Image (cartoon, rainbow, N blue to C red):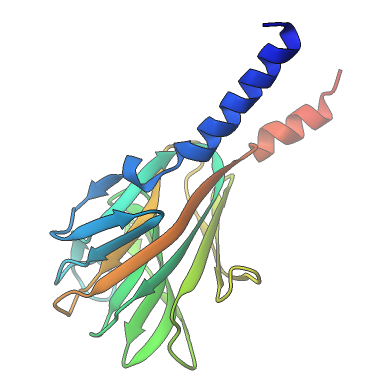
Length: 218
């Protein structure tokens, strides 16, 4: 095989590896639910009853027991997923979580509160906070996108996977591994069915390194 042919073969192999390296089958469970399945690029789970992620503030309790299906990434990236659920009880929720440990995480998605669908974000660093955007009507699904740059996570939502709206910019420790994936919680209820599809994490060039290289060209 000549040099050109070898180069083409290597490129082809790299494309194949990229196309198949991110699969739901290769991810891991934290608090695995009793019932779940993967079909093509879709994960469905029966969210475990009476489970959640929360630390201390306002309610005075700490829980860390809801199902979370994740892979671990370093550096900077963009993560995106489509989320839907058969929400039934107050605080039923499904979405994306980005987690360093039990004291440092962000969970965001749809949360069902007082009969309404809300776009929700909980940011936890020692203690948890909570922000919501109430929707005028129920939606069949929502897309969540999270972008990690330096020491921040930007969270966006979309109803059509085309137009995204920024809902939160939150601090998250830089330069350490972070678990990224899909979660569901049912703090008050007996669980519900949650479905996730099109989950994808795309690595981004490190912003600080890229800037350094630009400023120090030979």
